[in-house]
Length: 375
Picture: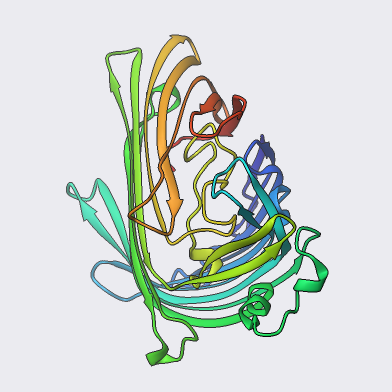
């Protein structure tokens, strides 16, 4: 990874990143910001990003205006675009080993959020957590085309209108939500410790004009703490639940009819597991339903790190989790491995060699990331 940050005069800030990771492959990002636009202290920033994985492109603009209150509060507004390529994957036997594509296409999400953020003090102001109440509009389009695994003569059979909706669909929703963010990070290099707690809950309903009804609650917790001068422990866990309908469609394929379960939850809210910051030993976001995300998620990780020389340390870890639609069968996947850490001037470079134990014939997988796992 390579990152450049610089701040010229006139209150403008620029941040650019060019990098490569096993999860994202090649990626780039650029952000421009303007601070203290007026005596009120409002600020504005706009940025874009691209990653080779799924040919994902994002464009985001944010505006923040301080409120005239006794505590620290801001009015916020943001607008965003996210576009990515996806594959609809199925399996005759329902396992990861025998997945194949039945459709490929593009998912585009256009969003607009309005809200209020409040900073609340902890420990006499030495810590803060942030509470944001918001309303978010989302317009989503799905444009898929069947692959060669779906026989042409069955793609437009009469009486299977749900199959047409599987290929192309558009939805509009308006969600009301609240989220909490409590980061506390201290130190640098191997001595970096602290925690990061996050939670959010939101709901969308046709009572106020949404095309689809859904609700979601999510919580995550990450902890880093030292024991002595050479040992460090890293613990993390996350859980998410969505109340959204599941549509089952029977799709004829070259190997016979398969059942495709698709959540009506918009794409940007669906859960996916697997990868360097989730369940290592499995490909990035490969643990979900049909390759298009799931309603629920449950993951956990325990890691121990030993500082053996200056800026270097070694690690061993155990991960477990999955993204799924049915709580009666979460089918949690296990991953274990060893890692090497280099604490450089641009952040911690983390190299992991992991094995996914619930995927037959899967080789050991390399994961490469940069930065603290607390963020």
